[in-house]
Structure formats: structure tokens, C-alpha cells
Length: 100
Picture (cartoon, rainbow, N blue to C red):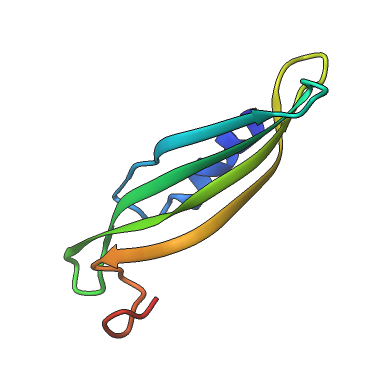
């Protein structure tokens, strides 16, 4: 988990504000009880400056899946996948409506 926290600040440098909302978490343990699978719905409301200097607010929505393993020192994420759903709002990298 510490490695993930170290990566987050470097990937957020272009945002004025950003949240990470997680809900509807599904947790399933494998029979060995040392591996678990997770699946959750995620919403990322974000804000960044547009080329005109105005704040652009948008949200990315998707599914986050993970595989957790339990070595002797505690639970660790061993695999993580983002399944993109959609982006809505004033997405700054779109060149036209509905484009991302």
C-alpha cells in the first residue's frame, strides 16, 4: 500500500482538485484465505485549468478490480486493473463534444 501512496502525488500534478470516491465494494476470498479479489465502482471528480485559464470540472467513472495477497507482514495489492466507464463534464483534453 505504501508504494501506491507514493505514486499518487506524481500523477495528480495537473489537477486543482481531485477526489477518489469508492463504493459498492465486492470482496471475495479464495479458499486458501490468503488471496482476495475486490471489485468496486469508482468516481473521480476533478478540476484543472483550461487553456483559457478557467477551471474545468469533469468526472471519470469506472470499475477498479484488484487481487490482494497476504504475506506474513499483512495484506498487499498484487494486481490492480482500471476498467474505464465514461467521462462527463468539461473534460479539458476533448476537442469536441463526446470526445476524450
